[in-house]
Length: 470
Image (cartoon, rainbow, N blue to C red; front, side):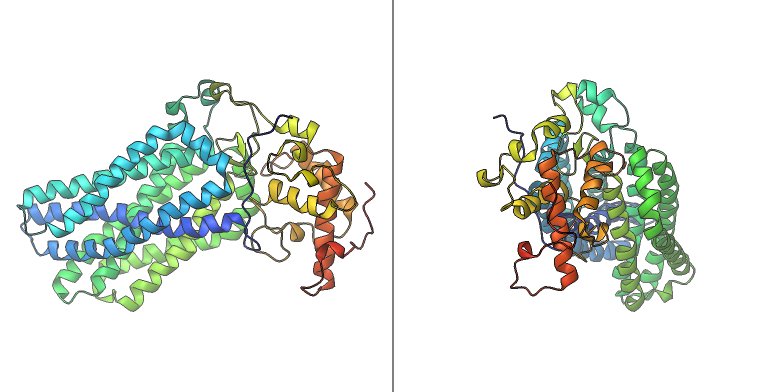
């Protein structure tokens, strides 16, 4: 029997798979954006120090550089591989698709990243040990290498949203994938936000300085950079919204903006007022103010932004041809990739998935619950939690804790089977598999309603609607 090129399913109970990636990713974004933005701040400050003969600015650059080594590069070096591990086990076909498209782009990014890491160490430890002009050239090299790493990664991330045209599907060209409709807008948003983040972190570094005159002078230099970066980021964000595919627009309007719009506006307002106030009265910058403002921007700003970007891609994980559940959604002639939805509809996941145990390949009354759980994990758990009350789009909660198998099965046979919901994958399964999933969800909901003890097997609890009619 022909099998699909599927992998084992990685599922984290309660919090779900996506939250694992999201938590690691947000920490990494805060660290990486700060490092890239700080690289340009260093270059601008050192240029001023060199041209205006203000060597005292190098004291701040060294102080910020040491902080950057500890904060951004150590944390970034931990979370970067963490992201690779998390996405590889959670979305192996998605990662494989990206590697097949962008292997040389990633290779180039690692070259720039090597220059960046060596550059920041050299920048910090060679202050005062080489002539100022050579050090200035080193700093600008560090800044440009840092931004190049962001540019290359943004090309890959924006392709994950969508290629923007049919060209890539026909050619399979890396250029058609990289220079997609979303690329420049996405790059603009991140470039502006990196300057804001670097300025806010710079205020934390400056707050601990004893030289009051130097501290105030540095803050007044950083604040306008952060304000300009923030204004540019907001402008590019509105452009970014115009480059989104239809499924992303629906998801944004229906679910994301109602949840996050107020927080995003609050972040813009707080960051703007903070930067303006710091420019006007640099003496207000204290650690007890700088740290909470940074934390607020990171938690209320970066976390929702990253979650929105990840959620807007749904139901796809890459290029609008790989669903989040790893099923190939459409043909890609340029890569000799063939869609799998119709094959699954005909033969079923139980017959085609290589990691389904042989004893579960046929649905029986005895294994219906176990098969339903397995199918739900394969088809749904990349985007949903299977636990009632869980924070990541809990499937039992989505069905309002219903124990009616017929109602649940009707959704599986209707909107889900026909792809009627733009941000949900088309999951077309044979009737026995639909019945097994419906039985599993109804049984879990019955258990939640009954408030069962932990030593009572969930599979032994009959749903309120009685046994399945399948």
